[in-house]
Length: 376
Image (tube, rainbow, N blue to C red; front, side, top):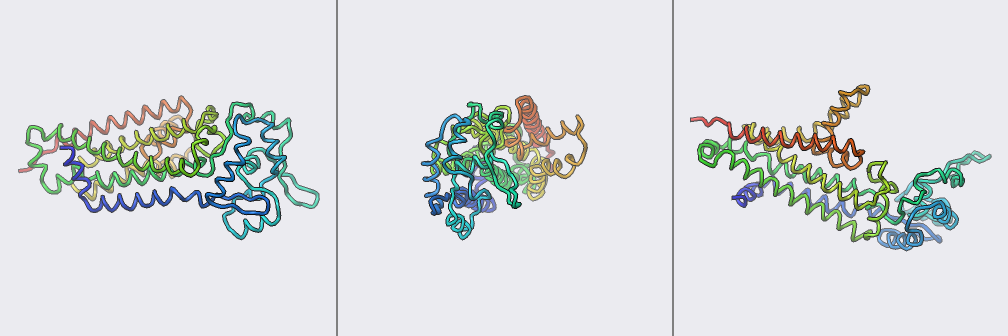
């Protein structure tokens, strides 16, 4: 029976079109960051895969616990990055290379994290390494943080995963939103519901099919995103501390390795997909039109974060606003990102809200379908 439900989802042309477009875009975007990889040194410009290989070789010398000595050694050898703005314009990169200096992952990292801007007598602003006293106060240099090469792929991994999550969710909404409303529209509900297994069992079967469809597609696309970065940047970056990357992570625990953050993000993304399926089926069970079901599902998916950005952020802080934001952030679109960067107490609140709303949606969906009145 579950095969028939999966076939029912995949037999719709709009679902197949959404699958094709979403998959193609995720595959294209997965290779996007390597186009931004550039290394400048010895008057040469290295780009793409050659830049990644060179950065790996340079960083290997300094990989391990990040200390003041590591930072000073990088600065003494390579100095300030001549490309702090990370320009990707080839002509500008060539010009910087001709002028001399270096721009690689290591001195780019030091330039971003451990330099100050000073103004010379002639009015020119230059970047200089912070003094030993100031460096000694940095929590990143206490030896608990692990340094290594992550490139732009691992460093901006959440950005890629978010795109994967959003596009996958939209495909699931398009494919699954007619699950009950289609029966109402074509009057097949009048035949199915009066049968012995037409109520709770059908609801469970279809919800299970939704879980399977969403889970398989999500994990396939997530696996592609992960393996593409692994193939390009290697696995050594997974041991680098989260605080040394652009990943959103709990700042009180950001010495944790990247693999831990990625695991949390992927599992939270999966939970959000399952919660989305339950939200879809409760909406579909109460809509008599497949088109209206689709619109309401999209509104439910995008609405909470829109409420936060357009309404709640404009109010002064209060306990009520705080709890309303928790509720909105626990919804499928924002939950994975907010959960991964939240502190431990906030994680507990978010997971309780997420599980609570998922269970409530499941109960309401089952009730909406089972109590539908068949018309003679």
